Length: 397
Image (cartoon, rainbow, N blue to C red; front, side):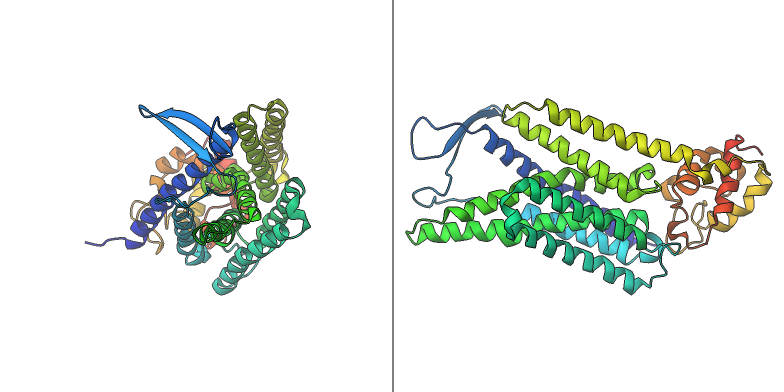
């Protein structure tokens, strides 16, 4: 009996990452909702309060703008949700994209990188991303959230563009997500929790806490709130080749990321019972632009038009292409070292199988050009066009 430990580790980490992420994002969304629903208290020295009902019971929450007059006996902290999400996410990045750099990260058509060089670029992007973001927050821009947000967004778009020049599109997407996730957890680890500890220490010492500590922590928490939806999109993006498989994947990521920010803003406005019509219109327009851009680009690329030109379009003409580039992985008994079973059950070693999965071949190999992984077999554009002609002709035998 052979146990594929790498696959089981991948599953365990991904499941753990998803669970921790739900806990972190859930608590983040809840506390933003809580802040936006606070009303002046009818009595006491709290700065705001809110009543809610859930699970058959009533809850009365109060917030102290700086700190209560004395430390409570039992204080709950929210930090491990963030730390665990980042640790499991980083572990997945290492396991899939760094250890498997040849298959998932390096694109020889863009840059002839060694595994070490690719990993070095990826790691440097995370560190540099945090240093740039934290520097912006500590600069005078940190007092103007809208300006800071615009500059940070421009930095991320530049990072997406730059990484797409050297990595596979999927690899570039995941590293941009890791940059954002690192900034978010850095906010928790380096600012939010340390500031809260200083407030607690001041209370224990009988001193008045510095209001600036709580203000800075709340500001970083607000940043995290707006970065959440773009990160969530990147987490699921590898399922949607029309995004990272576009001619300019960095631009698609920029548009969808901005759409996510607009959607998050809609929720924040509605929580405050503020008008959200303009934000909804912006989000709708951005979504429309994204879908239109991807669709028009796909329809007008010359290479795609060439794939419908005259030429042989039968099984005999494309079977050698499948044999050379696909069946090592996509066979009932794969011969590739990287898989033990055909990925997603897709088999391409017979005509019946190839015809059955022709739409997926069109999407992943002809349009998005992401198969074979890392193009390690060197599939040419001409070969992809031949597959496109065969599929366009109805996949004849």
